[in-house]
Length: 125
Image 1 (cartoon, rainbow, N blue to C red):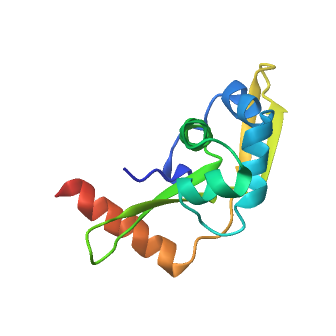
Image 2 (image 1 turned 135 degrees about the vertical axis):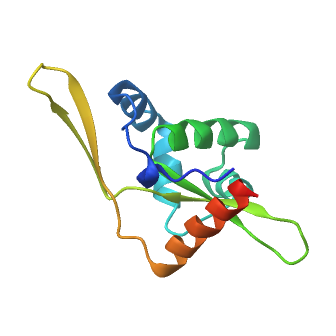
């Protein structure tokens, strides 16, 4: 499954985003993701057990802090890579005094648009 938070219509609950951002392991993962990496690479780079890494990656992707994409390989051994999905996160108040989270996202390149198109094709087949 490929998850791209920039394609969602509704932002995640502010509590989900703040919970993830307050987590030390999640902060280390964000700092390490200068380039897209696999869960195994992240686990090794951040010195976090692989099972914990997967849990953190799921929470971070659900909170729209990471993009998840699938690298297609000719040998059939596809791999999932993770990348930071934001440049900044802003927490504010609505007129009703409810918290709201807003993300500033990096501009997607042609390769990202192609990957998104390919993932849509795969979902429909």
